[in-house]
Length: 451
Ligand SMILES: NC(=O)c1ccc[n+]([C@@H]2O[C@H](COP(=O)([O-])OP(=O)(O)OC[C@H]3O[C@@H](n4cnc5c(N)ncnc54)[C@H](O)[C@@H]3O)[C@@H](O)[C@H]2O)c1
Image (cartoon, rainbow, N blue to C red):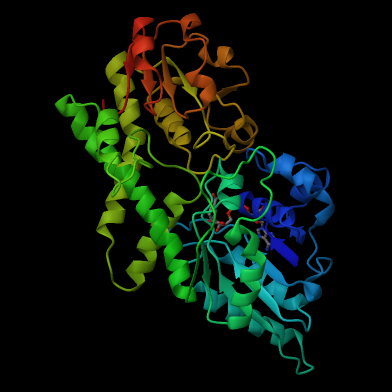
């Protein structure tokens, strides 16, 4: 099929590469010309394992543009909207990018039936809003009586950054929200290889053992949009739940890692998203939980469970600094090294990263902060250069003169580094991922979260 992806960020590039790999002709459109220039050179504008390699494998099926009029819209079968929907100050999602994308698509539609798939996470009910905007915009641009032939469908994205390619080739499910038979049929055809899992696995991304079929859930548009928010909120509260239990474990002298393992082995609970630590960050959980609360508020409903999950999560960022203060007594003038700056390993994304708040609190309390990250330093320097943190390209440089170390992001590199060569200063293991026994044998004091 001929596919257009609007927005070349984490979701857009990933979706484009996967659909091109499955044999479709895909155009990527982004208003950011720098991103398009990079893509034309075969470089991904975002860091994701296997993304750039797979992109270069299917480059002959990919086209890149920043112009709506040159994107071949009249001839396109399926258009994905994957632009950002960041939080506004009141928690609601900022829909201005979705509106711009919808209007620009409407301006360029031809006579052919086109399916518009909204993959951006938008407030529940937005699908209809996009359709209304598009119809109005189309009509105001066509005085010839031509009727637009399109349908807006919701197909929320569930990928996790750091494993986006794997999640997209081997999803747990595909959700399609639509009551339009033509759209459902077209998307069944487009997603067919993913549902049947009958494509050859791409290099470096082997198919998980036993995966034979991926379920497709077709439902109404509003339910599809709700599934996305409800899923993210549930994962977020699972993390906050274990952090709340971790706070009690610490007081009682229990080890939260053992507790997590013990409860996670119960198949009704499952062991994922049960690691106590610094909590969630990233572009989705914070923004989507805030939006869900804001949506409910419009209907005079409170969401106390989700509100508490947020409170616990953001409290973990102060808690880690308090642990540090307990160790060092005085933070003023102390050198603190942060290992990891991205919100999770295998990504360069700093949106809502705990490292940013931790840096701010530390600097506020008079500490001197140095930080290292294997891939996020370019973003850190360009977006957070004014914070007062010294960003270091080498771990050794970041560790220079350290009075204490905080492991913020569980990159493998930090777990496996030569700790023997590092001065024996207190280490706060913000992700409970270090080999504590070995580190203690080496003479380190390691303070975990909830242990
Ligand atoms: N990142 C994730 O892990 C993830 C997972 C699931 C869902 N989502 C949702 O997917 C959406 C996109 O997220 P992302 O992380 O890829 O965002 P992103 O910020 O990385 O990318 C968005 C891109 O859209 C482009 N853009 C903005 N307005 C445009 C326009 N009018 N026309 C063309 N391009 C335009 C921007 O330049 C940017 O490159 C969001 O709604 C997000 O909530 C993200």
